[in-house]
Image (cartoon, rainbow over all chains, first blue to last red; front, side, top):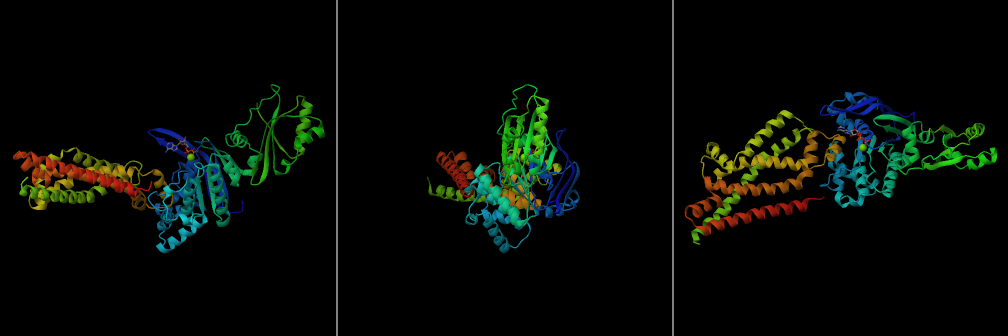
Length: 341
Length: 217
Ligand SMILES: Nc1ncnc2c1ncn2[C@@H]1O[C@H](COP(=O)(O)OP(=O)(O)O)[C@@H](O)[C@H]1O
Ligand SMILES: [Mg+2]
């Protein structure tokens, strides 16, 4: 992936909101790279600054300091007309769809082409093609109010694709949809990413969205970049507290609190990747070493079809036994981190 | 009721309709752009401009707070200059048009404010120019609300036309004053009042129905 061209290169982005003399630092020293063809997730709690971050990418929001390069071009240096041209190559879809309610589906899809001054005949042809991609060619004469939420988002996707953009920004695009429809929309986005080589940036507060389709992920916490990298890497080895919380808690389904049987005993979190997930390594541990661990929480997920696991275990009481267990885990290639109680 | 009174009332109906719709037309020609200017120059909007917004807003507020009766009198020289006379149907149209502009401007502004900001954000993200956003996104989305507002405005102008007619002549207002007030003809007075009420109701209702019919949400 990293040999691909950089679509966005963010360097030390800082964003401050000023309201009636009050200042709020919404983004603080955020740096990240997004490469061509990636599906890049940006995840964080509500209010973390995700929307602000994605809105700086097409300059819906101006930054205080730092630099954003889009295909090597400094976004801040663009004149208004140049910026509008750049924006035509960066489409955006929203949680609330933002369709024109008084216009038909096809008129909505044709609008970006009208902005790009494409002749009317061609506009219609392209719009129809786009509606076919999202599976709504039979709804072209309908009005958005006659469609379901999932269908409206499909129209928004068709509209976003119409001007043949290089990037698609999705700000909580599935957050208003139920799980089944979310799944369908995500599959559609994935398909578009593959067939059209479109770089997709997905803002979400749901880990399941990242798990399902993202290659890379950035975790934003209180305006700061907590962690960024391959989804697989972050899932198996989250380094920060926020990342650990997101990965372990999944979609708000709280895991058991680490209720150790002995106060002050050592608790570790082990992460295993696709290979060792199939291995019954806890029972192997008992067989091979004769030591037992107390499982406090276990959580396995499938990321991009490969199994990933997290397990929080309480180590045996004796120092010596602890070392045997830890060595065993390490010999199996598992990543082990101490959990502070 | 005498035949000549009936004929006068029927003519009055036509004159009232003429005054109302011609004034509404001119008032919209001016009021619509003023309303758009108020909207786009407001804080946080596409052409945010404090000076222009304050200037236009102040004039609109001044005109709006001026009682229509006073405006009628103040406008007499202007009317005479434009129409060549200060009495008759056409003479009433001048103050009516001017008096309705601020009302229409505020109504238009409020209709445009109803358009969700998400629409503007989507338009901006598509690389649309500010003018394109105003004319191809905001105005079309506001059409049902604009029509609903227009019905209210036209009904208001009709009410004003009765007043203008009473002063400058023309329409049902003049008839009500001449026959109903000066000659104490109660039948004519209440007939004209009833006709005016019905006319207002018809305009108001057709506006609502039309607005509902075309609104797709
Ligand atoms: N226009 C604004 N003025 C002031 N504060 C804002 C503005 N927009 C967002 N914020 C604040 O910035 C923070 C980040 O907002 P946002 O980027 O929308 O978060 P997220 O999308 O992660 O939920 C929030 O605390 C929010 O209250
Ligand atoms: Mg948000």
